[in-house]
Length: 213
Image (cartoon, rainbow, N blue to C red):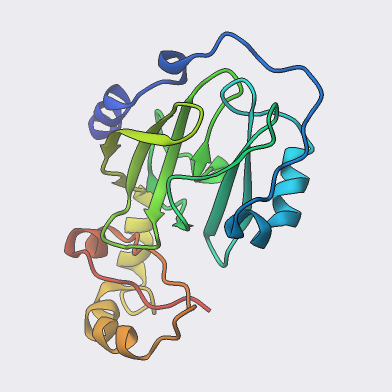
């Protein structure tokens, strides 16, 4: 496991590789809510932008929840007020995978990482809540859009493996997931949230874990 973590860390991109030199310190411009997306989340976008830039020198990344272990985001240009969408509409995530760093980090897990002095956005999760696309994504911001620079597979957290072996009949175990995945796809409501199956055995078989309430 330690070797695998070291390999993952070595393959990762760093914030310093995408460093920005200038940080905006002028008057904040009110977000321009000119799109349906921006108007739908106006309260969250205004509140997040009011705190000032936190990304790529002059931008504010604003996040809000969309269910259990699910987030959405927008990017606000604090100088012009322009509002941009993130690289995904929704992101499902779980701290029970090792995504990035030198060891288990479940206690301080963040699905989205960014810095004021860098154009790099690091995303750990399943974009569009697609359990077949759970990964560690590195995006570069060019001022208007994100470009994917690297994608790495996460590692199962050791504690999730021990939990599954001690409780083989838990509702989130794979023996339940495989049997009921097709039934859930037929019966779940359009707006129900599905989360990525993060138990090691499930991840290997790409099975969809049971719905969470």
